[in-house]
Length: 477
Image (cartoon, rainbow, N blue to C red; front, side, top):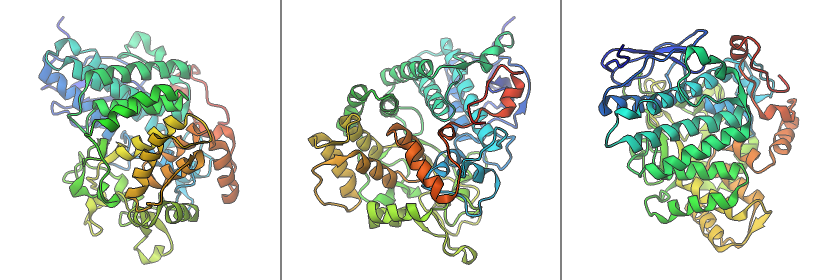
């Protein structure tokens, strides 16, 4: 029996996190997924051109569906709720709903935002496996497609392991007779080994053609961040230096220009998730949910702690480009980010059809990681290379006083104000080894109950139920 079926037909397959979905020949976003109890794989490709639709489909998975229904995989669109809003960077306006449970460290295993992210990222991994298992039909682009698929898989596992700890780690499309792999949690060191191997392949196989698809520089920067997370500073440094010396990337002259929608995919952007504000299918909702002049749903509001950091550490230019008071009179005195105002238009007729790209990696992050790699876990550095990278970021912000020594706290503060609301703060606090202290103090100030077990999210209860007891829960839930 010939299992190859033409991509021009609708291709039915079942996603890793026990979801079924249908994709069209155009590589458009998947239709409404439904929970089921087993996995099959009938997605095969017969040509390189067809396989490229599967490659594009990986990025569609990261892009996610623009909707308010948790039956739809939202991809990266709600990541800020799981990261920024679990730190001292932002929170809810009213303290109500599931996002507020994350904000206050009282999240439960039935939280639908957590479950959606978990299933979305296993969906992304499934899509990467479909590409990897069909590389035999590729010709001139085989290495590129492999590099892209392994970059995407590594990106997904890196986020999952940092947010959930030990997780299942399928490394291929899972068939019905082997679905137990979906419910077996794997040690973090093994997961990191796969991530490193995948990104090493991506570095070797890719160039810098794209900004909204995997590239060599994106793989180098992401792999460097993986090594920094593991405390492997000597491994990170030689990955960052080629990105800096390549002269292919630079800081935008004006900080606010990074986020100007007419200037998207500028020279500072290394990897972004692309969106289109013209139609619902390729648009996003996060701009309306998390920004001033959006829908003002009550998410991603700045506490005074963050406002003070932007004003006193970030400087006037970054502060002005990063946040503003909610313009609606009924919410006077509340402040939201303005980095991703829907379609760059404060008066957008429908802010829920956002076309702003989501920035995953940009050059300023690379420069600050360069400082971190040179500092190598020490309390400070006066190294000339570190000073040059740090000074460049500060100079762009209009803070031109000469730096002679950088402390770990100064670097962490700089990352906070430079990369605010871009989903770095939570992971930075963990990587710098201060998450328990900073978030514990923050929780005390807000009247929340925080413990070290809150650094990991719960495994979604739905997955535990589907596993029939094979999946165990994280401590504290």
